[in-house]
Image (cartoon, rainbow, N blue to C red; front, side, top):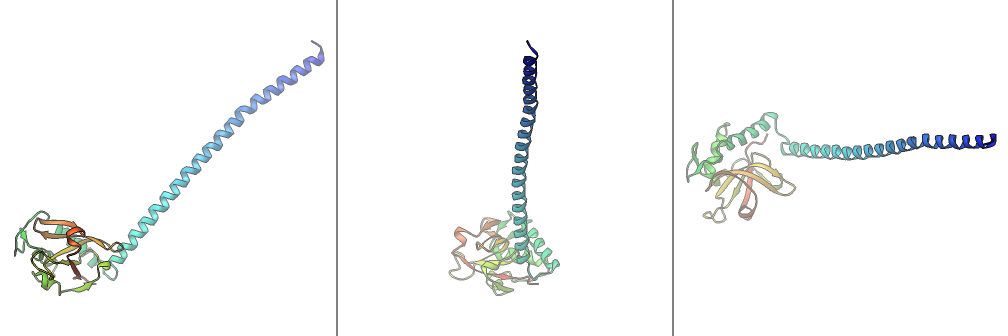
Length: 205
């Protein structure tokens, strides 16, 4: 092999070595780019999740604030305690005319629960419907009394419960009451919708 051939072969080897040296670098760069893209996707999903959680939390906070608008901190805490008191009696028997603490009828239950916090409301549902202040169905909040007709009351008030939670945008709510099946929670649906009469608020400030 002459000198020219040796030089040519050497140049080819050097070029090959350079190509081989560049290959891992390109592969590494590709992996880095892919990794960056994955991180960007993950961050994007996390950002969306965080934003969603923040918006949800903010909405809940605003709803809670609107439900308790105008109430003192003491009254807000009392409403929570009223619901806790009501929950203590879940499952207790319904007995017509019973005022507690071991048996209740509907208005006996609501009057008993409120009495534990110093509010003396009538033990009769029709008179309770004249107490406190009237509340529109799309402005309900925890602790409000909700009234219904019953099978025996015709178009008059015949049943009452205490609001536990309310979705005022949808016009729905959950309430606790002494039904013929005992003290229990129910949603405002089915049987209760056409029987709804109105609501009254006992704690107003």
